[in-house]
Structure formats: structure tokens, C-alpha cells
Length: 124
Picture 1 (cartoon, helix red, strand yellow):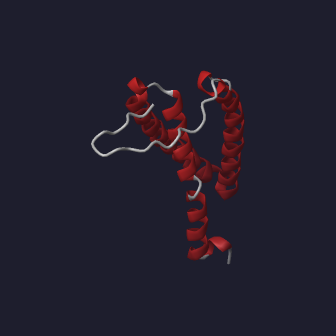
Picture 2 (cartoon, rainbow, N blue to C red; picture 1 turned 90 degrees about the horizontal axis):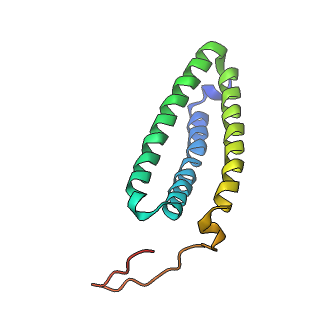
Picture 3 (cartoon, rainbow, N blue to C red; picture 1 turned 120 degrees about the vertical axis):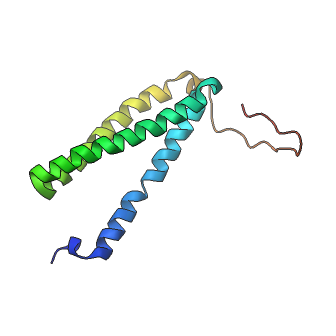
């Protein structure tokens, strides 16, 4: 009997994998909010959602074909390859983001501003 024959182990493993999705979405949304002008903000968020869905569909297609052809070990190696590619892209984008105009001007976290009833302050 392997670990995957126990449904509780599979449920816990999928839950742990799912914990990584939220921070990625939040980070992506924060980067879009900080580096995209207000005129393109809605389109940028829509594009983020569409490209995320397309990426999930494509990775499912490639992952399914890989597991069918190579078995579970091939699927695991594909996931490791995706992880390495993600790390490399993250390192490449880190240089772009840290060298951007907003970051070089000292753009930090937005300060908390009180919102007065009846007179909301526009966000910068």
C-alpha cells in the first residue's frame, strides 16, 4: 500500500499545494496595482485572470499527456521542471521590478489614510 492509496494523505497534500495559490495571486495583484496606471488597471486585472486560466489549462494538458506517456515519475519531474522555471523567471523579473521607476523613486507601501464618511479620499 502506498501513501497515495490513502485518501486522507491525498487530501492533505492537495490542501498544502493549494496554500501556495493565494499568495501568488495576491502578489501578482499587488504588483499590477503598483506598476500599472489607473487607466489600464481594470484591463490588467482582467488579463491576469485570463492568462492564469490559460496557464492552468495548458499545464493540465501538458501534465496529463506527460503522466499518460511517462507515468507518475514523469509527472513529478515535470512539476520539478515547472518549479525550476518559476524560480528562474522570478529571479529575472526581480531585477526588472526592483529597477523600475516606481521602485527607484522609493515607492513603498501605501500609508493608511483615514476615510471620512461622505468624503472618501481617492487612492493614489
